Amino acid sequence: MDFMLEEELIDLYTFCLQNPDSAEVEGKKARIKEVGK
Image (cartoon, rainbow, N blue to C red; front, top):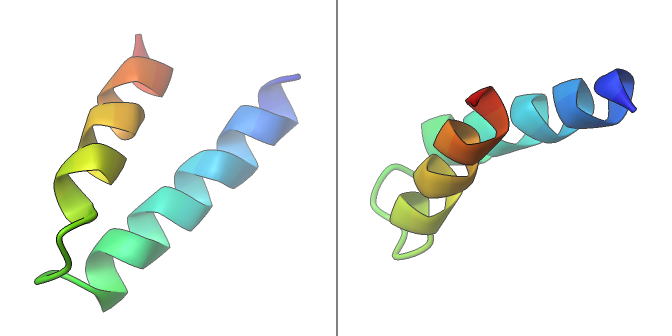
């Protein structure tokens, strides 16, 4: 299960770095915080 969360975090960070002006970034950041808990 942990490897799935790690893969998801990599995808989320990659999206945020490649699309900093996207409307979806705030939702992605919220998911990053949720996974990090």
